[in-house]
Amino acid sequence: NVIIGTKEQQMAQIRADIRDFKAKSGVDSVVVLWTANTERYTEVRAGVHDSEENLRAAIKAGEEEISPSTLFALACIDERTPFINGSPQNTFVPGVLEASLRLKSIIGGDDFKTGQTKMKSALVEYLVGAGLKPTSIVSYNHLGNNDGLNLSAPQTFRSKEISKSNVVDDMVRSNPLLYAPGEKPDHTVVIKYVPNVGDSKRAMDEYTSSIFMNGSNTIVMHNTCEDSLLAAPLILDLCLVAELLTRVQIKCESDGEKDCFHHLHPVAVLLSYWSKAPLVPRGMPLVNALQKQRAMLENFFRAAVGLHPENNMLLEYFS
Image (tube, rainbow, N blue to C red; front, side, top):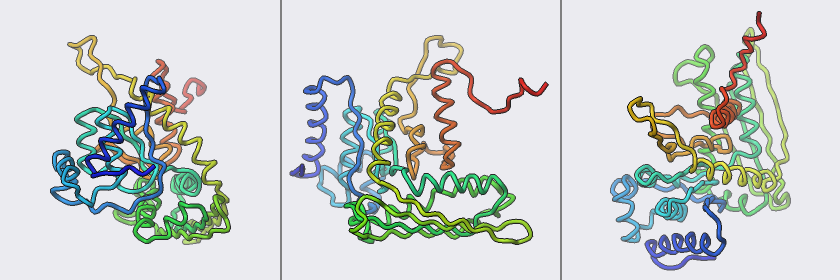
């Protein structure tokens, strides 16, 4: 399964493989989803990753600091094939984003949200919304599959640490009565490789919150996460929704063009519900709160079939 050759040749092979698979299988469309091990974080460099033109020139020149997942992403964009990043590394460097926008090819990610982080995005949303102030979140994991072995290397663990640590930021900012500008909880993430547990990842979390009268509340949680079994349904959902998004169009706001429709933004924010570190268009607020992500998804599908969004006000029952 190793693709040989220069980076330019590797990207050409990926494009050929996509076309070949589509022709031989007879499918109408293809979605590519990256499920490989976490790569180390790419050192984004000016003149290499900062624009589509520079990125393509760097690939042609065989620049070392271009990751395999970035090659896959750009190859998929060139084939107008949705590409989803299921790992935490920074695949979508600025040049990839620019190419996606120019060619209007869907990209989404990053990093599957399966066990510990999904629970965190639900629990912290609840705590902050209830007026309890998380002041410390400590998350410990150990696992024994190949992902655990790969994450035992400091340079790849850094990718995972970033995607796991940023998940509470928007929830903290949502309540300025609890948190002053720039204030956030102490948040530590630890991952250890223990071969004996295999795919049954152990996740242990401690949430400490400041409560009424300067009291302290602590919630401790133990979660045995069957990594692959939790991720597999997400893969199906991500592929199905990504393919659907390629067929959805929105009517233009201009009254002068009655039959004017345009495609959705190629950065597929609707995939956020399944992602630890959601990729969003520039200028769009980042939402990690699980229930807000789900509400966005549900209301989008309601709109697609002509239904009003759910607002949970129930005003019709108040009189």
